[in-house]
Image (cartoon, rainbow, N blue to C red; front, side):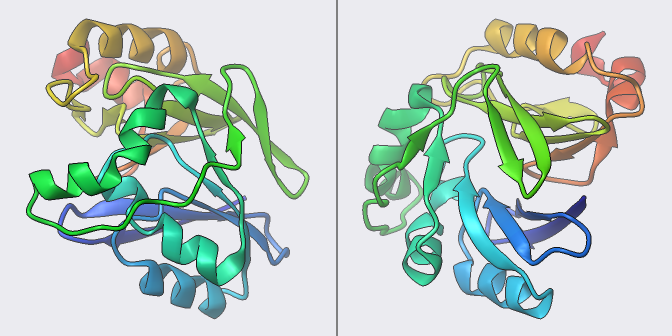
Length: 206
């Protein structure tokens, strides 16, 4: 499995392209502020984007969804807990002095314990609220695409609308710290980390 991270925008958000080695079929996770950059990278890698997966509905993770859908026709997947955040993208943008159009409709709703596939590779969907009501993790053996739930040495914010600190800590303990220590977590911001490193050293999880 290829995990191609693309740092973008004023929030230094990590967008990801996921593809099986040797295959052109790909999904894009959390297309943020620079959709042209994501499309160019996919083309350079010889990848065709077939689906858009969203870990949550905050603007830095979804502001490029419309452009990606227009360019590829790929369906959009989101957890229903973040329906309101996603649909209110223009209002989110105004909080930061930005002007964004409404996003395209969601084509499919993610469910806890459901699955999503990249070619023959299957990811389990784990609902992990706390940063936002509908935050999810995409999990396969050895790999987590984690959104803004857990970072290297830190955790996601819980002071935004719909966030809750204790819910976030519970999500991390139940949905991430139950995974093997060598599982690599690819977060929504910052460098990858591992479950074991965060279990041992993350001050928020002491």
